[in-house]
Length: 339
Ligand code: AMP
Ligand code: MN
Ligand code: MN
Image 1 (cartoon, rainbow, N blue to C red):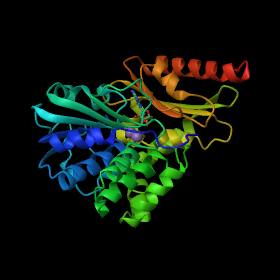
Image 2: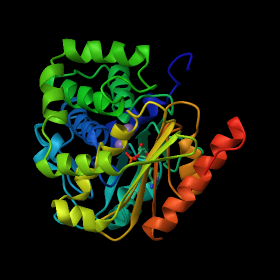
Image 3: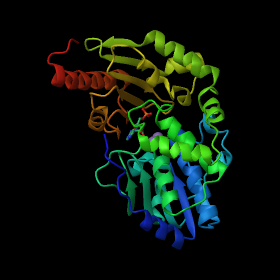
Image 4: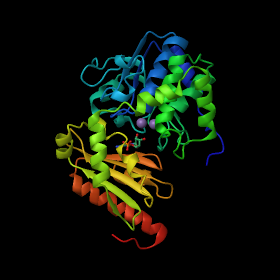
């Protein structure tokens, strides 16, 4: 449990933005609610507070359907319609624990950036930007954006409040994960007072899914398996299942969380085959096992209790590794764990 917000050098970011003519904002591949919320909020702060006209937003996989209700979401470039890399004063990466999380397609943009700034909440070793505003104890990138806005006394208009509330709500799993701190409620109270509408936002984000997502969820709950003395719930989703159900990669968002409803489980994980033929691991922990370090060993990363990884190795091979490492982590705490 943290004792208070980590001190971040907001003055340095303020100075960087004040001097910049052009800013490009990037988020991670398979953007989620936090990533999109943080980008859109930063865009408004740059345009309204700093009066910058040349601000571009980049999300390799575009905007997930459940975030498209946000005004301005239609202006975010994806890998297909993005302009080619050009000189830019500042590249700002939000919700990215590493530079490669923006996607290979955009790596050229970083090479052409005068300065790289990072606003994030992932566990990292020091950070990769010229300026790193990373607080691993923050609930979300949106929380860090809010604290920055507060520090520069930017006006939080109803749209900005909606973006930030949506992102914080998303990354706290609707205010139930262990990152739901007093600071989260303080900030969200301010955001609601500034015009964010909790009911409408929740309805748009969570009850606005494609039928194919619900079909995939049905498949997932029916086919999840239990191992490790009942403490591990896991699920493999081969590409053929997506094809049969007419599901897309985006339909996988939010599936892993549902496996955690199982009473006994301490770790829940989905291992899925993505449209580009890679294997994607999503892991969640109920509080004892550090899935962040398991995913780091698999070449990924994230947070202590929510993490992920990607691999070029086949589904079954990656699943075997995930389960082996998770059983070992449980055994380290509790002694022998049944296979
Ligand atoms: P996910 O399971 O994809 O929802 O991801 C859970 C958390 O881990 C998120 O905060 C992600 O940003 C992070 N994460 C997922 N995949 C990776 C990866 N390959 N490398 C680093 N962090 C990741
Ligand atoms: Mn994210
Ligand atoms: Mn996040």
